[in-house]
Each structure stands twice: as structure tokens, then as C-alpha cells.
Amino acid sequence: MNESNFKIEKHLEFKDKFKSKILNGKKTTTLRIYTNLKEGDLVYIHCGGNVIGIAEIESVMQKLLKDLNNEDAKLDGFKSKDELLEELEKFYGKLPEKIFIIKFKLKSKLNEEPYKIYYGNTSLAEIAEKALKHLDLDEKDRKILELFLKLKSVRKVAFKLGGLKKRGIVRRVLRNSYRKLKQKGLI
Image 1 (spheres, rainbow, N blue to C red):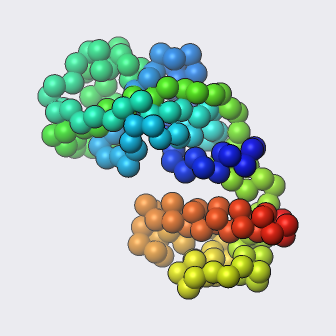
Image 2: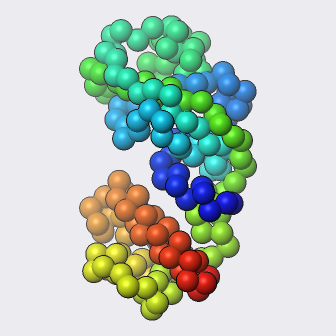
């Protein structure tokens, strides 16, 4: 993977059943109950455990759930509004009054393991050990890396930090450490 891909920090994850629809352009939107995405963002598209492409976010808008229609459903890869709502309820449970519609355009196709995009063939333990030894880290990052070496799991560290949503923080520390170690020629 090329170093410029490190600028892509955001992700859209999909069930494997949507892979062909995304790759052939039949699925160009996704509905989410929350998002940090904005127009112009580049994101990795994940499906079935692999990164299948890079997409650009064309728009992000909120819509009342009651105002969704069959066209929204078709752009999201479903046959009807009812089928879409059924899937959303299975995934999220009770739905909020408003939902985000994220429109994206696939810019390039990939078939990569997410791990290799960020870390090449270097183990996370090696990154953490070398970062602690060779990098000038702030106290927060140092504690995250030390905890990672102790627990050997991004997921377990996230739970210790307050919950599964904290995985991004742990991954960011590991990615930044990898990048700095690579720049110094230590990996």
C-alpha cells in the first residue's frame, strides 16, 4: 500500500452480502443512525473482513425516518422501503426519528486485509514495543501502548478505556506509531 493511503482515516463497514452491489455501483448510499463523515471525505470500504475499495463521500444528509421512500431503499441496495426498514431494525434495534443518508462514490477497488493497509507485515506487538523504546510519546499514548502489550488485543484495550467505541483511539495510536517508526527507519 502506498503511503498516501495513510491520509484515509475513516471507514464504512458493510455486511458481505453488499459487496457485489457496491463494486458494481448498484449500492451508492448507506443509512446510519450516526456518522462523523462529511462531504469530500475519503473512506475505506470494508466488506466481509476485507477492504474492497476507497470511496469519496458525495453527501451526508439527515432525513426523517417516516420520509424515507422506495428510491432511498434502491440506492441503498434494497427492493423497497419496507425491506430497508426491516434490515435497519434488525441491525440497530429501535430506530431514531431521523437517520443519516450517506451517498458515496467508489473511486478505486481493492482487495486488501485491513491490517496490511496500516501495518504492512509488522505485528502490533512489535510496533508497540519499538514505539515505547524509540519514540517520544505523550503519557496517554504510552499508557495505551503499555496496556496493549499487556492485554495483546485492541478490543480489550478499548474496553479498558471505556468501551468498544474506543477501538479507534487504540488503532490511531498504533498507526501513528507505525508511521513514525517507519519514517525513522526502525521498521
